[in-house]
Structures are given as C-alpha cells and as structure tokens.
Length: 348
Ligand SMILES: *Cc1c(COP(=O)(O)O)cnc(C)c1O
Image 1 (cartoon, rainbow, N blue to C red):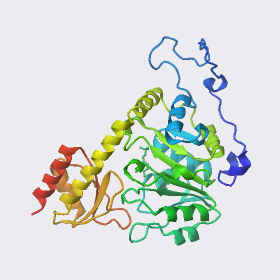
Image 2: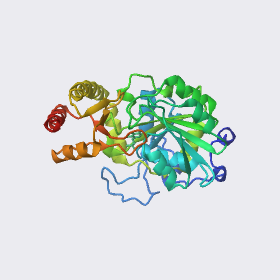
Image 3: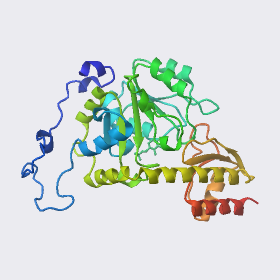
Image 4: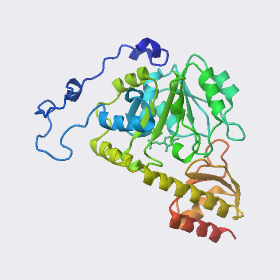
C-alpha cells in the first residue's frame, strides 16, 4: 500500500511503526464494557475518558456532509496542525522543500521552518493569480508540496480553477488546495476531484464560516493511502472531546451557518460601497472571502488611526506586492457601522 504514496513521503518514514494507544487496540462492538485499560479516573464526568483517537462518530458525520468516504478524511487540531503534519510527513529536512505562492497564508513558511524544510517562493502575478509556467518550471525532484489557498489569504480572491488543475497535473508531488474560505465562495470544492487526482489534498476548517476558531478543528481530504499514513503519524488524541462534541452539534446548525454567511456577504458588499467613498482608499481588491484587502495612501498611519478609535484591522503591507494594504474582516452590522464612521472621521 505504501508503494503508491512512497514518492510523496519521507524515505525514513516508509517503515514507520505507529504508537498504539489503549483505545486503538480495542474495538467496541456496541456492548457496555468496563474500561480498565487507560489509567483514567473512573469517576464519571463529561470528560473523564480519553477521546476516540480515530474520531469515528465525527468523521462519519463529516463524510456524509462532504460526500467522501471516512477513510479519505483526516481531522486535525485546526488546519495549522494538518499543515505541520503534512510538511513533517513528506519533506526531508534540509534536502527537500515546499513551494508557496506569495502573497500567501503565513503558516506554510513558518511550519516548514520549524521542521527544517526549505521554502521556494513563486510570487503571484500582477492580478494576484497563479503563474503556472513559473511554478512548474521551479518544481524539481526535491519539491514535495505546493500550497494553494483559494480563496487566497491575504489577497481575498480565488484562483482560476483550470490553472490549479494544470498545476496538479504538471507536478509530481502533492498539491494542497487550502479551502479555508470555501463557504464564502460560489465555486465548487476541489473535494469533487479527489478521485481524479492522486496527488491532490484539500483542507478546510471550522475556524472561519463555521464559527469555531476557538475549538481548533481542521479537515483534510485525500486518497485513502495518504490519509492512513497521516493518521498513523498523528498524536493519538489530537482532537479533544470538547471539540468533537461541539463540532457534532455545529453540523446540526448548517442552516444557521448559511444564514450567517449570506449576511456576511451582504455586509461585505455594503463595506465595499462605503470604502469606495473614502478618498484615502485607493484600491478595493475583489473578494471571494469574509474579508477585504484594500490599498490606502499610508497603511501605518491609517492602521494607527483606526486603532485609536478602537478598531483593530490587519496591516498586511509586509507581504510581497501588498505595500500600503490593510486586511479587514467583515464584522456584524454594528461593528461595520463603527468601522465606516471611523474611516469617515479620519478622511479629511
Ligand atoms: C484562517 C486560515 C486557515 C485556518 O487555520 P486553522 O488552524 O484551521 O484555524 C487555514 N488556511 C488559511 C489560508 C487561512 O486563512
């Protein structure tokens, strides 16, 4: 089985023998058992037992929702943990590298650095789209993963679907399509293409539209061999029972989530119109996400002026091609009203 994925993963992990936790060795057949296998406190409370290491109940629910098989699904302590795991599992420190496409999400590079893995950067073009030719020309035998967040953070736009497909088809390593903002975008998910592309990995999160950033829950979807390998390397109890229970409840509230998403999109449009009347806002970049990237006359000045009025935005200016930009999340109505008044106050 490992043969099919051996080109993706670190050579020294090919014969890896995973740790077996107590709960891994016993399969519950539905009977009420007396659990004396894991040195837990036996007095019952909501959380005296270790959580299910394979998160079967939650995975079944997510598999139904996303229309995948449960063995195509890896759950993580936020997407951050998945990003770290996939880099650690696939890239040999010093020798091998990942490819990122700046301006891009900051965690890919941070995670690679922590694991001693090199990073090659291929900037987006002037429209913040993928430079497919340069990406494919930059890739070589040591390139293990290309990270493509779409819609992209911090630029807010989504990438051309065919361009992403061309990268997946032209690259022999893994392509991670990070769909953290997929609920705000009307394009179909790359999850639908998992059967077509063996080197495709898709990740999504409960942190954005799902409204559970504090619970830390990420989902990764890929071919079952790779998922099985990722599961064998993970910390046995990487998801805690509070998070598992909260996520199961959230899955019953998808109508509410959809309503919130519609509201956020309407508010985003209202902000765009208000921003277009502020003289120091020079560009409002097109957004497919729950935030707007804007270019202003002086980002540090405007950032500080907003801060003085009690409003915290992100100064995204240090990213390549993002000089004098601010990244602003869409809030609830009153928050957006306050933002608009604050911008008007300083627009003199
Ligand atoms: C916010 C974000 C994430 C989410 O990470 P979590 O660890 O799940 O909170 C992942 N990718 C991108 C591009 C993001 O912007």
